Each structure stands twice: as C-alpha cells, then as structure tokens.
Image (cartoon, rainbow, N blue to C red; front, side):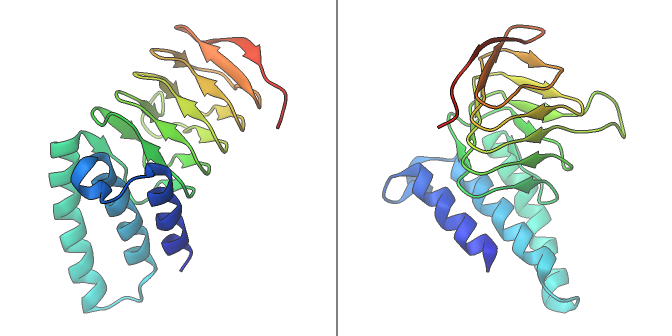
Length: 173
C-alpha cells in the first residue's frame, strides 16, 4: 500500500530505534497513516469497527500529545514532528513530502468553510508558525518561528514575521 511506504518514510525521518518510546509525536503520525488506510477499506463491519477505534484513539492521542493530524488531511511521506504540542492541521490541508512541523504550528483556514493552505515538499515550520487561508507554500520553503503567513511563499523562500514577509530565497537544489 502507498501509505505503508509513506509510514516507512515517516519512520526514516525520525532516524532512531524504537521512536514510539522516545517521541510522542510519532503516535499522531502513526494514527494518521492508520486512519488513511482505514478509509480505503471496503465498507463493512471491519471498517466500521476500525473507524470507531480510530476516533477513540484520535481523541486520546490528540489530548495527550497536543498533535491533531486528521485523517482527511493529505500529507505526503516523510512527515517529521519535532517538539510535539499544540500542532493543529485543518482537515482539508494538503502537505507535501518530507515536511517538518515544530511545536505550536497551526495550518488552517481564516474562516469556517474557507480555503486551506497547500504546502509543497521539504517545507520547514518554526515553532508557533501559523499558515492561514488559501495560501501556497512552495517547495523547500522555510517558515520562521512565530510567523503568520497570509500570502503565498515561493519555492526556496524564507518567510518571517507577523504578518510574514519574504526575507530570503534559496537556489533550487
């Protein structure tokens, strides 16, 4: 399954033996991947029971770790969550491959029913960064700590401040 490869990429980003014992954030990543697999199961009792267990675990892990990664969000392989706590991803968000989230990151919409961010590959979010509304964050971008991103960030750029502004652009690798 595609998510099994995604999960393997997630584990690889943690780069340690037995991350379940050392990094609480991986509990949320694991449950996200498990929820995605459940959604692809054919309808029936097994799926229904699996989803009931998923939602119970989702609330427990969200409460214990402070990481909310709803299964309806689209998240590429290799997600790394550093310093768990107060991380919220809107259910309609799209996040690319090999992205890094730090504590306090919020990715969501500006108002109920509004558009949500689309995040490229290899994007790093500093602590307490917020990306709000229908913005696009380009590949290899960096969002500085405590930044509030309300407009698009091009590939390879670094955005900082509240509201965020582009302070640097790197050459594409």
